[in-house]
Image 1 (cartoon, rainbow, N blue to C red):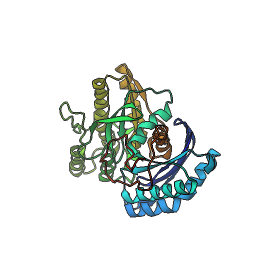
Image 2 (tube, rainbow, N blue to C red; image 1 turned 180 degrees about the vertical axis):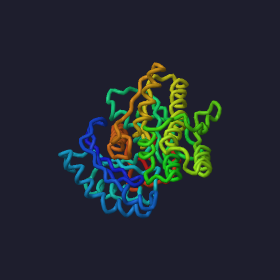
Image 3 (tube, rainbow, N blue to C red; image 1 turned 60 degrees about the vertical axis):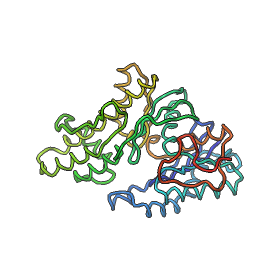
Length: 339
Protein backbone atom coordinates (compact mmCIF):
# COMPACT_ATOMS: atom_id res chain seq x y z
CA UNK A 1 0.00 0.00 0.00
CA UNK A 2 1.38 3.40 -1.04
CA UNK A 3 0.22 6.39 1.00
CA UNK A 4 0.88 10.04 0.25
CA UNK A 5 1.37 12.04 3.43
CA UNK A 6 0.93 15.83 3.77
CA UNK A 7 2.12 17.79 6.82
CA UNK A 8 1.53 21.53 7.36
CA UNK A 9 0.80 21.84 11.09
CA UNK A 10 3.29 24.66 11.68
CA UNK A 11 6.04 26.10 9.47
CA UNK A 12 7.30 23.07 7.54
CA UNK A 13 5.67 22.19 4.21
CA UNK A 14 6.19 18.47 3.75
CA UNK A 15 5.04 15.62 1.53
CA UNK A 16 6.13 11.98 1.52
CA UNK A 17 5.25 8.59 0.12
CA UNK A 18 5.40 5.60 2.47
CA UNK A 19 4.86 1.98 1.48
CA UNK A 20 3.20 -0.52 3.84
CA UNK A 21 3.51 1.84 6.79
CA UNK A 22 7.26 1.37 7.28
CA UNK A 23 9.19 1.99 4.02
CA UNK A 24 9.86 5.66 3.24
CA UNK A 25 9.98 5.99 -0.55
CA UNK A 26 10.38 9.77 -0.43
CA UNK A 27 10.27 12.61 2.06
CA UNK A 28 10.43 16.26 1.05
CA UNK A 29 10.46 19.12 3.56
CA UNK A 30 10.46 22.82 2.66
CA UNK A 31 11.51 24.75 5.76
CA UNK A 32 10.34 28.27 6.56
CA UNK A 33 12.93 28.83 9.32
CA UNK A 34 14.71 31.62 7.45
CA UNK A 35 11.42 33.43 6.83
CA UNK A 36 10.34 33.44 10.48
CA UNK A 37 13.81 34.13 11.91
CA UNK A 38 13.37 37.85 11.22
CA UNK A 39 10.47 37.90 13.70
CA UNK A 40 12.01 35.57 16.27
CA UNK A 41 9.18 33.05 15.98
CA UNK A 42 6.53 31.62 13.67
CA UNK A 43 4.02 34.12 12.28
CA UNK A 44 0.86 32.07 11.55
CA UNK A 45 -0.42 34.14 8.63
CA UNK A 46 2.96 34.10 6.90
CA UNK A 47 3.27 30.35 7.47
CA UNK A 48 -0.15 29.70 5.93
CA UNK A 49 0.61 31.75 2.83
CA UNK A 50 3.93 29.99 2.32
CA UNK A 51 2.22 26.57 2.58
CA UNK A 52 -0.18 27.57 -0.20
CA UNK A 53 2.76 28.52 -2.42
CA UNK A 54 4.83 25.43 -1.74
CA UNK A 55 2.38 22.54 -1.33
CA UNK A 56 1.91 21.41 -4.92
CA UNK A 57 5.61 21.67 -5.89
CA UNK A 58 6.58 19.72 -2.75
CA UNK A 59 3.97 17.03 -3.47
CA UNK A 60 5.10 16.68 -7.09
CA UNK A 61 8.70 16.35 -5.92
CA UNK A 62 7.75 13.67 -3.38
CA UNK A 63 5.89 11.65 -6.01
CA UNK A 64 8.80 12.01 -8.42
CA UNK A 65 11.36 10.93 -5.84
CA UNK A 66 9.24 7.89 -4.97
CA UNK A 67 8.70 7.07 -8.66
CA UNK A 68 5.01 6.78 -7.94
CA UNK A 69 2.16 8.43 -9.85
CA UNK A 70 -1.36 9.21 -8.64
CA UNK A 71 -2.69 5.93 -9.99
CA UNK A 72 -0.32 3.96 -7.77
CA UNK A 73 -1.44 5.65 -4.57
CA UNK A 74 -3.82 3.83 -2.24
CA UNK A 75 -4.72 6.79 -0.08
CA UNK A 76 -3.86 10.27 1.16
CA UNK A 77 -3.08 11.11 4.80
CA UNK A 78 -2.98 14.67 6.08
CA UNK A 79 -2.36 16.31 9.44
CA UNK A 80 -5.64 17.88 10.58
CA UNK A 81 -4.88 18.53 14.27
CA UNK A 82 -3.44 20.05 16.40
CA UNK A 83 -1.46 22.99 15.05
CA UNK A 84 -1.78 26.47 13.59
CA UNK A 85 -5.29 26.37 12.19
CA UNK A 86 -4.49 28.42 9.07
CA UNK A 87 -1.54 26.17 8.28
CA UNK A 88 -3.64 23.05 8.83
CA UNK A 89 -6.37 24.40 6.53
CA UNK A 90 -3.85 24.79 3.71
CA UNK A 91 -2.77 21.15 3.96
CA UNK A 92 -6.24 19.70 4.45
CA UNK A 93 -7.74 21.70 1.58
CA UNK A 94 -4.98 20.46 -0.72
CA UNK A 95 -5.43 16.86 0.44
CA UNK A 96 -9.20 17.04 -0.13
CA UNK A 97 -8.72 18.41 -3.64
CA UNK A 98 -6.26 15.67 -4.57
CA UNK A 99 -8.40 12.93 -2.99
CA UNK A 100 -11.40 14.12 -4.98
CA UNK A 101 -9.51 14.56 -8.25
CA UNK A 102 -7.69 11.24 -7.98
CA UNK A 103 -10.60 9.34 -6.37
CA UNK A 104 -8.51 8.22 -3.38
CA UNK A 105 -9.54 7.62 0.25
CA UNK A 106 -8.62 10.42 2.64
CA UNK A 107 -7.62 10.13 6.31
CA UNK A 108 -6.93 12.83 8.86
CA UNK A 109 -4.01 12.23 11.21
CA UNK A 110 -3.25 13.59 14.67
CA UNK A 111 0.18 15.23 14.58
CA UNK A 112 1.30 13.57 17.83
CA UNK A 113 0.30 10.13 16.51
CA UNK A 114 2.61 10.82 13.59
CA UNK A 115 5.53 11.40 15.95
CA UNK A 116 4.70 8.16 17.77
CA UNK A 117 4.71 6.29 14.45
CA UNK A 118 8.08 7.82 13.50
CA UNK A 119 9.67 5.36 15.92
CA UNK A 120 8.40 2.48 13.77
CA UNK A 121 9.80 4.12 10.65
CA UNK A 122 13.15 4.27 12.42
CA UNK A 123 12.86 0.69 13.67
CA UNK A 124 10.37 -1.33 11.56
CA UNK A 125 10.74 -4.35 13.87
CA UNK A 126 9.53 -2.31 16.86
CA UNK A 127 6.72 -4.18 18.58
CA UNK A 128 3.87 -2.95 20.75
CA UNK A 129 3.53 -1.93 23.49
CA UNK A 130 6.04 0.89 23.94
CA UNK A 131 6.14 4.28 25.62
CA UNK A 132 6.98 7.28 23.47
CA UNK A 133 7.93 10.77 24.61
CA UNK A 134 6.78 13.34 22.05
CA UNK A 135 8.67 16.54 22.75
CA UNK A 136 8.62 19.61 20.51
CA UNK A 137 7.85 23.32 20.42
CA UNK A 138 4.16 22.65 20.88
CA UNK A 139 4.01 19.29 22.64
CA UNK A 140 5.51 17.49 25.59
CA UNK A 141 3.58 14.27 26.13
CA UNK A 142 4.24 10.71 27.25
CA UNK A 143 2.21 8.32 25.11
CA UNK A 144 1.55 4.64 25.79
CA UNK A 145 1.27 2.93 22.40
CA UNK A 146 -0.54 -0.38 22.89
CA UNK A 147 -1.31 -0.88 19.19
CA UNK A 148 -1.58 1.24 16.07
CA UNK A 149 -5.24 1.79 16.99
CA UNK A 150 -4.87 2.49 20.68
CA UNK A 151 -2.70 5.20 22.15
CA UNK A 152 -3.20 6.96 25.46
CA UNK A 153 -1.59 9.92 27.20
CA UNK A 154 0.18 9.13 30.46
CA UNK A 155 1.57 12.61 31.09
CA UNK A 156 1.71 16.01 29.44
CA UNK A 157 2.92 19.53 30.10
CA UNK A 158 0.74 21.71 32.29
CA UNK A 159 2.06 24.91 30.76
CA UNK A 160 4.99 25.39 28.36
CA UNK A 161 6.27 22.70 26.01
CA UNK A 162 9.94 21.80 26.34
CA UNK A 163 10.74 23.15 22.87
CA UNK A 164 9.01 26.43 23.69
CA UNK A 165 11.13 26.66 26.84
CA UNK A 166 14.30 26.07 24.80
CA UNK A 167 13.39 28.75 22.24
CA UNK A 168 12.23 31.40 24.70
CA UNK A 169 15.22 30.89 26.98
CA UNK A 170 17.52 31.10 23.97
CA UNK A 171 15.95 34.44 23.11
CA UNK A 172 16.53 35.64 26.67
CA UNK A 173 20.17 34.66 26.23
CA UNK A 174 20.44 36.68 23.01
CA UNK A 175 20.53 33.69 20.66
CA UNK A 176 18.80 33.70 17.25
CA UNK A 177 15.65 31.76 16.30
CA UNK A 178 15.19 28.82 16.33
CA UNK A 179 16.96 28.64 19.68
CA UNK A 180 17.06 24.89 20.30
CA UNK A 181 19.96 24.05 17.93
CA UNK A 182 22.00 26.98 19.28
CA UNK A 183 21.44 25.80 22.86
CA UNK A 184 22.56 22.29 21.88
CA UNK A 185 25.72 23.59 20.16
CA UNK A 186 26.74 25.79 23.09
CA UNK A 187 25.81 23.16 25.70
CA UNK A 188 28.34 20.74 24.23
CA UNK A 189 31.08 23.13 25.38
CA UNK A 190 29.65 24.00 28.81
CA UNK A 191 29.28 22.68 32.35
CA UNK A 192 25.79 21.25 33.05
CA UNK A 193 26.30 21.78 36.78
CA UNK A 194 27.39 25.41 36.56
CA UNK A 195 23.93 26.80 37.41
CA UNK A 196 21.42 24.92 39.62
CA UNK A 197 18.35 25.63 37.50
CA UNK A 198 15.16 24.11 39.02
CA UNK A 199 13.53 20.83 38.02
CA UNK A 200 9.74 20.70 38.37
CA UNK A 201 9.14 17.12 39.51
CA UNK A 202 5.46 17.64 40.49
CA UNK A 203 5.56 14.82 43.03
CA UNK A 204 4.62 11.44 41.58
CA UNK A 205 2.84 12.96 38.58
CA UNK A 206 4.02 12.12 35.07
CA UNK A 207 3.09 15.64 33.95
CA UNK A 208 5.64 18.30 33.09
CA UNK A 209 6.00 22.01 33.85
CA UNK A 210 8.61 24.28 32.30
CA UNK A 211 7.21 27.75 33.05
CA UNK A 212 9.15 27.95 36.32
CA UNK A 213 12.40 27.06 34.57
CA UNK A 214 11.77 29.77 31.98
CA UNK A 215 11.20 32.30 34.78
CA UNK A 216 14.37 31.15 36.56
CA UNK A 217 16.41 31.66 33.40
CA UNK A 218 14.92 35.13 32.87
CA UNK A 219 15.84 36.14 36.42
CA UNK A 220 19.33 34.68 36.12
CA UNK A 221 20.06 36.48 32.86
CA UNK A 222 18.92 39.78 34.38
CA UNK A 223 20.95 39.37 37.57
CA UNK A 224 24.05 37.83 36.01
CA UNK A 225 24.68 40.67 33.54
CA UNK A 226 26.91 38.53 31.31
CA UNK A 227 29.33 37.19 33.93
CA UNK A 228 28.59 33.48 33.34
CA UNK A 229 29.66 31.91 30.03
CA UNK A 230 26.82 31.31 27.58
CA UNK A 231 28.12 27.77 27.15
CA UNK A 232 27.64 27.04 30.86
CA UNK A 233 24.20 28.64 30.89
CA UNK A 234 23.11 26.62 27.85
CA UNK A 235 24.47 23.39 29.28
CA UNK A 236 22.75 23.96 32.63
CA UNK A 237 19.45 24.77 30.91
CA UNK A 238 19.65 21.73 28.68
CA UNK A 239 20.41 19.47 31.65
CA UNK A 240 17.45 20.85 33.61
CA UNK A 241 15.08 20.00 30.75
CA UNK A 242 16.66 16.65 29.88
CA UNK A 243 16.71 15.32 33.43
CA UNK A 244 12.95 15.66 33.85
CA UNK A 245 12.15 14.31 30.38
CA UNK A 246 14.29 11.20 30.82
CA UNK A 247 13.31 10.36 34.39
CA UNK A 248 9.57 10.74 33.85
CA UNK A 249 9.52 8.78 30.59
CA UNK A 250 11.36 5.84 32.14
CA UNK A 251 9.08 6.03 35.19
CA UNK A 252 6.07 5.88 32.85
CA UNK A 253 7.49 2.80 31.11
CA UNK A 254 7.94 1.05 34.45
CA UNK A 255 4.41 1.93 35.51
CA UNK A 256 3.04 0.58 32.22
CA UNK A 257 5.18 -2.55 32.46
CA UNK A 258 6.84 -2.09 29.07
CA UNK A 259 10.49 -2.55 28.21
CA UNK A 260 10.82 -0.25 25.20
CA UNK A 261 10.85 3.54 25.10
CA UNK A 262 11.05 5.87 22.12
CA UNK A 263 11.29 9.59 21.55
CA UNK A 264 9.92 11.82 18.82
CA UNK A 265 9.33 15.47 17.99
CA UNK A 266 11.60 18.36 17.13
CA UNK A 267 13.36 18.48 20.50
CA UNK A 268 14.23 14.79 20.08
CA UNK A 269 16.50 15.93 17.24
CA UNK A 270 18.82 17.09 20.05
CA UNK A 271 21.47 14.37 19.96
CA UNK A 272 22.49 14.98 23.58
CA UNK A 273 18.92 14.20 24.62
CA UNK A 274 18.83 11.11 22.40
CA UNK A 275 22.10 9.93 23.92
CA UNK A 276 20.90 10.49 27.48
CA UNK A 277 17.72 8.53 26.78
CA UNK A 278 19.64 5.64 25.30
CA UNK A 279 22.11 5.46 28.19
CA UNK A 280 19.48 5.65 30.92
CA UNK A 281 17.15 3.22 29.18
CA UNK A 282 19.90 0.64 28.84
CA UNK A 283 20.94 1.21 32.47
CA UNK A 284 17.36 0.34 33.44
CA UNK A 285 17.22 -2.76 31.26
CA UNK A 286 15.10 -1.17 28.53
CA UNK A 287 15.44 -0.79 24.78
CA UNK A 288 15.36 2.70 23.31
CA UNK A 289 14.42 3.88 19.81
CA UNK A 290 15.74 7.30 18.78
CA UNK A 291 14.74 8.27 15.22
CA UNK A 292 17.05 10.24 12.95
CA UNK A 293 16.89 14.02 12.98
CA UNK A 294 14.86 13.97 9.75
CA UNK A 295 12.20 11.79 11.38
CA UNK A 296 12.13 13.84 14.59
CA UNK A 297 11.36 17.21 13.05
CA UNK A 298 7.97 17.75 11.37
CA UNK A 299 7.72 15.54 8.31
CA UNK A 300 5.04 13.95 6.16
CA UNK A 301 6.54 10.45 6.27
CA UNK A 302 5.30 9.96 9.82
CA UNK A 303 1.84 11.23 8.78
CA UNK A 304 1.71 8.79 5.87
CA UNK A 305 2.76 5.96 8.20
CA UNK A 306 0.04 6.81 10.72
CA UNK A 307 -2.50 7.17 7.92
CA UNK A 308 -1.55 3.76 6.54
CA UNK A 309 -2.82 2.03 9.66
CA UNK A 310 -6.13 3.91 9.56
CA UNK A 311 -6.58 2.85 5.94
CA UNK A 312 -5.69 -0.77 6.76
CA UNK A 313 -8.48 -0.74 9.37
CA UNK A 314 -10.92 0.39 6.68
CA UNK A 315 -11.26 3.93 8.07
CA UNK A 316 -11.55 7.07 5.99
CA UNK A 317 -12.78 10.65 6.26
CA UNK A 318 -15.05 12.47 3.85
CA UNK A 319 -14.94 16.00 2.52
CA UNK A 320 -16.20 17.31 5.87
CA UNK A 321 -12.81 16.57 7.46
CA UNK A 322 -12.15 19.54 9.72
CA UNK A 323 -9.06 21.17 11.22
CA UNK A 324 -8.56 21.70 14.94
CA UNK A 325 -5.96 23.91 16.55
CA UNK A 326 -6.16 22.06 19.87
CA UNK A 327 -6.25 18.43 20.93
CA UNK A 328 -9.86 17.62 21.79
CA UNK A 329 -10.38 14.03 20.65
CA UNK A 330 -8.77 10.62 21.32
CA UNK A 331 -5.36 10.22 19.73
CA UNK A 332 -6.34 7.26 17.60
CA UNK A 333 -9.40 8.94 16.01
CA UNK A 334 -8.84 10.83 12.78
CA UNK A 335 -10.79 13.82 13.95
CA UNK A 336 -13.09 14.07 10.94
CA UNK A 337 -16.27 12.33 9.90
CA UNK A 338 -15.13 8.75 9.55
CA UNK A 339 -17.05 6.79 6.98
